[in-house]
Length: 114
Length: 111
Image (cartoon, rainbow over all chains, first blue to last red):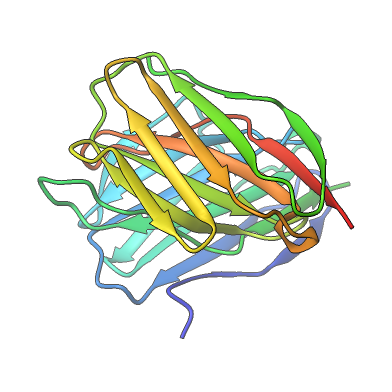
């Protein structure tokens, strides 16, 4: 069973379109994240949700809107796609604890905007 | 603001060699450090998690060490194999805040 699963794995779309990426985790974790990996392979946090509540929103254009219908899902909707949005988007989850929670990542969604 | 640096950016070694990948971080107030492996076009696979109270973790041919006070971690790979070729990412965490990643070391093990 896949712990953190994202769909679709690949997404090719035209500029100006609106698209969504879905993420689900079956680990029972209460915190989920979206990361962006750019063309230079650098991973940066975009959003963090804890128990469906937005905790962290880094400097991300408001064309990106995460939505968490429940603790196990964190979807990413992107409006008016631009060429610069092309990247690999990773979903991750962890369990809040006083110690050191291990993060688990999905396989990534490679978004190509043409 | 936490910054994570990985050296070298790329490394090529012959099969069978032992090697060390380095990771340094600027803010030593971390809760954990995680090493990941990423194959081309693939996702991230967690290799080792070291909690701040630990000095090292081992899994098979991999050994990761952590020196919080100096802000350093190393990933030691023994008897490298071509299948070890991948990008290795170091990331530090603080509580339940998102991980901060380094830019990775791209490893090639030549048969």
